[in-house]
Length: 311
Ligand SMILES: NC(=O)c1ccc[n+]([C@@H]2O[C@H](COP(=O)([O-])OP(=O)(O)OC[C@H]3O[C@@H](n4cnc5c(N)ncnc54)[C@H](OP(=O)(O)O)[C@@H]3O)[C@@H](O)[C@H]2O)c1
Image 1 (cartoon, rainbow, N blue to C red):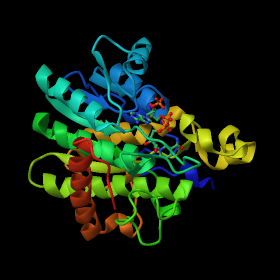
Image 2 (image 1 turned 90 degrees about the horizontal axis):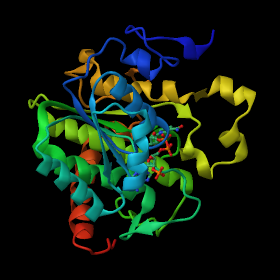
Image 3 (image 1 turned 180 degrees about the horizontal axis):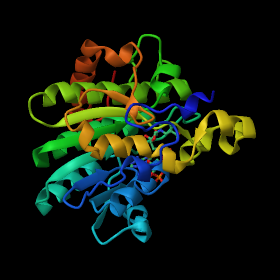
């Protein structure tokens, strides 16, 4: 039996597309922020949110990239520049949104980079950790005052949090990557941070009606794989059948978790194939999640003032 054809009790599974996961939903009164909205899963997420009537704020690294999204949008679309590796850009975009007077129903923390071949740092922090985790941590926290009472935060993580992780989890003494660097492990590290962030946010949201969850979208051939070897990047028939989803299927889980009424009270969970999934042991570690939150605050404070992080 093809194990990927299994579906959950909700009738959704590996092959479910973003349109199917949101079938019959009316999102006309929802305002949803999507990061990394100009490419891959983010672009499909924006398209389907738009199709369901949502007002979408599409964030991209530059304003030109954010504006390029317009071709697939309805009128209810705001392009916004937000470079998640630049504290000043994050602050500016959050201030823009706060000033505009909107209330946000959902933030889909989708942007990401993967497996940079050589160590790259900005503000003293390894770039995958900075972009994938710290940038989203900062953005969500700045936008908390304008979240609706039932807002949902969805953090796009990856099974890489398990497959590529460091054996002892978050490297609290090596946010710079200086001590040791592995392209894949640094990615897995940032994706573990994504899950721990969602978990700790969910804990802090308790009793508020707001929720936070993390997802693994599947393995999808997008620009994310730009640093990978040609077999993975361009595929083979075997890999295609066994491993890969298309972009429509890849965006399904984040859309389902961010919008479906069945999940309005579900928080602090991890999803894959539009169904609950266990995380790694570290992904469930509450002490690690709390410590990461405190360290992330320290990092944000330091780099927001124009200083580099020093271990
Ligand atoms: N594709 C997969 O197989 C897979 C598997 C597991 C998890 N994921 C996760 O899914 C998410 C979406 O990835 P994808 O596959 O759709 O990749 P993608 O097509 O490369 O899209 C990534 C998006 O993130 C943006 N981004 C990168 N750095 C940024 C920065 N500093 N500031 C703001 N935006 C930035 C990119 O902008 P530019 O276009 O300017 O680069 C792009 O819009 C990521 O979080 C990824 O880790 C993907």
